[in-house]
Length: 214
Image (cartoon, rainbow, N blue to C red):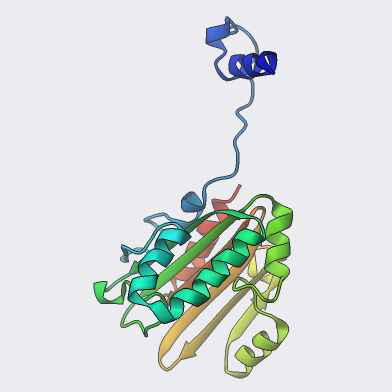
């Protein structure tokens, strides 16, 4: 065990082990954090980050006080995701108007609002299995898709979205509010983008978010 630790230390710090003249070794990186995937100030130009942004646990703690009716449902979702292998999370919330922050999806936004949920799993198999489970909030089953299409939604699924096989993107106008939703799984992540009145920036942001998964 000690020998293995020393070998790893030498590979990590070549100069300390007199290996400076040896061949260059590739840098092995793990998956990005959920925060690095979900959050970037350039994703939604003109919008400001809301204070409820943070880990799912942090988000839930604020929601429990400000939107208790929604809290239990979201807590159940997070508990289910963790049971399915989720080990990291981040919720990024942006709004054009401060009054649209801290609504936790329960209110009707007065301006542009965007939510990004990034959930990292222990491996891609767990993420894929979670996406395909119809009980999860990061998935829409065929009956829900049919209902949305009947209500006027434009829906793309799978490779047509540009986000991979396990993905769905829809847009719909509801009472004068333009809603955009993208749900997808890529490698060890499940991600959701939910945006209101952001028909132009939301698709671009989704592509950028997906590109940060490696």
